[in-house]
Length: 318
Ligand code: HEM
Ligand SMILES: *[C@@H]1O[C@H](CO)[C@@H](O)[C@H](O)[C@H]1NC(C)=O
Ligand SMILES: *[C@@H]1O[C@H](CO)[C@@H](O)[C@H](O)[C@H]1NC(C)=O
Image (tube, rainbow, N blue to C red):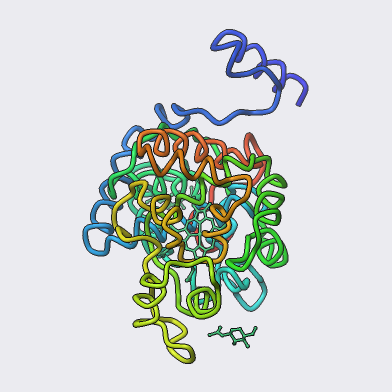
């Protein structure tokens, strides 16, 4: 153990003093360069196929990554299926009948295993797939640090407590992201994940029927596909371009056209108004800050080194 650490530190000091400032293993962009050089191509090809078939899949996979990272860290815990003897996160309130895209991750994993058996974690596949989904829908690319390992546990209670509610107010959102080491500005830019994708009617009904900080024409439009009662699972787009990763989410917020209560609180006279305005005025600044914040979110408590495992199948521990 001690000699492993010594070797690691020695290797670190030779390779890069900056990248290895502590004995804790760090994620690195080139982690699989030697062991699975085709990884990035495999993930991109399967994601391209999936997003071409259904553009929303880019959004669904991005959300899966967020929900993975906020519960026990980015460790693939959300991918674990419930069984008779295992309770995972997929039936937590924020995930049940909502989190989707698991088959795409499974399809990627199958192809990755065929190319590089027992090498690449499901947590890393999810991190790459989330990036590719954003890029395929028009977002700016970023380099994804890799080397996460997969958990042998999941946390239903953590998923229920640590994932924000669409009914949350601004101080709650800020403190829930702060609990994961993310600033209020990073919370605001990561909420820009809602540049793509859809929400179910039951989660924005109260907003469009009862709230007053909403553009009336927007409320009327959304009501057409979200009745005051019934139709709970009908979808509404987060912004006017749900298949395009652009800054119109923020432009919509400024126009009081946020879909969820938790979207509009970012621009409602509070501390994030100026940041929302900045992003509404500059797609370039939004896309740059989003990419940086995704790297930071992807760094939440990863399992590294000999912790965790490389799952053979993403839905089940080895
Ligand atoms: C700030 C707190 C957040 C809250 C309260 C929140 C809440 C929600 C809710 C309620 C939905 C709709 C789920 C459904 O109808 O089944 C949703 C969808 C989505 N969320 Fe968030 N979210 C937050 C932050 C984020 C972050 C940080 C990301 C990614 C960086 C993200 C990405 C997405 C995406 C892409 C969708 C659409 C998924 C799809 O269409 O399948 N969200 N979110
Ligand atoms: C992958 O590795 C596992 C365990 O080492 C082995 O059982 C399995 O047959 C291998 N699969 C392929 C496709 O090589
Ligand atoms: C509007 O608010 C009232 C009072 O809180 C509530 O009873 C009602 O269900 C809400 N309506 C909708 C459509 O959410």
